Image (cartoon, rainbow, N blue to C red; front, side, top):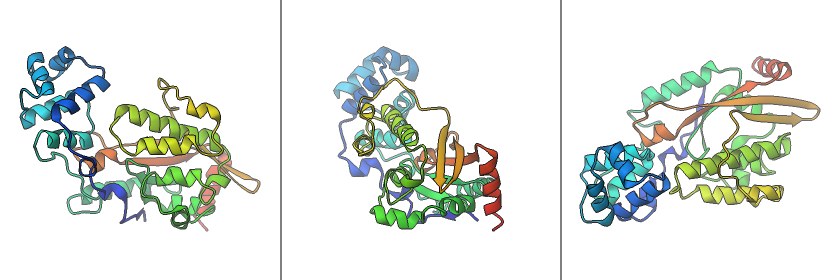
Length: 289
């Protein structure tokens, strides 16, 4: 039966509660500049006149709620940041951020549990938008439990509330001593963090994670010279060693399509697949012990 963490950070306060409300016009201009979209282009995308967009950005006009959502959708703004745009314009958030185990989310939680269970005996887990462990199947607990007790390791690290999976891989108290391709794996986290920051430059947590990775004692110097045009590899590879035995995986990430909730939009299911016959056989043997 998949394990759900009741204290998962999907129930954290939204970004808009953690940061001051800024002027809507300045925020809209910031998103438009970041997306490299002119006022004329945004007008074409949203159906709102260029003149009115100019007035919104300078504060000469106030938007309606529908207009805020239309502009946000045209700029591909994440739901969490759409709520911030709405609040900056004086409106209530449009998108909920209820915990996965709350009433109303039972259907989605059941779907995730079924996905994790169907992936047995291979590891699978549900992560939130900050790589925190939300749910895991028995296959994940069996396999990673050979190396560390995940929750005891997190406590030893300091019980971080953000980027738990990344920090488990970064620290000696976690999985680092067992990761055979540590440098390649952690660089993939760094590349994804930088890519995520490009998509959402207002994320208050990602810069700290990037600094933590690049300042790690074992981080190569070239990690501090980011290539902002590069994209992460199409599949994350992980190789773990215990004694003479090496386990090799590749992973796949899946998301809810067209999510209408901050919580669901930020969730991902990471499924691990054996990359060789020895790993497959070991996982199947573990399931019968």
